Amino acid sequence: MTTFPRLAAFALLAGLVAGCSSGGGWNDYVAADGAEPATPKPMTVEQISEKVGCKPKMQVEAEDVRTAFCKTDAGEFFVNTFKTEKLKDAWMNEAPEYNPHLVGPKWTVLGPLKVLEVLKGPLNGDLHLTDHRVSQTPPPPQ
Image (cartoon, rainbow, N blue to C red):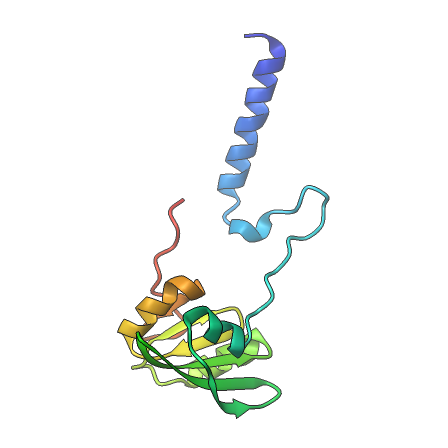
């Protein structure tokens, strides 16, 4: 093997080792142009409802939180969106611990477990069962 292919293979291996050992997940990556990666814009009540095929019936329409009731073939549930992650976390800390939640960026869906399991795929949410601060969704394989 000549020097250039060896250097290229070594650089590739070093990059893989560095990427796998950072422990920070996707948040550590920077775009090729040096810009920070774009954070997906949080979904609205209407966008969440549309993704799962229901027409939301608004219950709370405030500046910091919006809540709607939804009903689909899968069942009934509530969609909550929050102005900040901090507000979502505070709300979840007060939520009844016996109710499972599906959680995403600045939103939660509250409903029966069988309904949340159906909604999890289309919403790409994290399932929280009893302790709302701890995800029950297994982490992706590494």
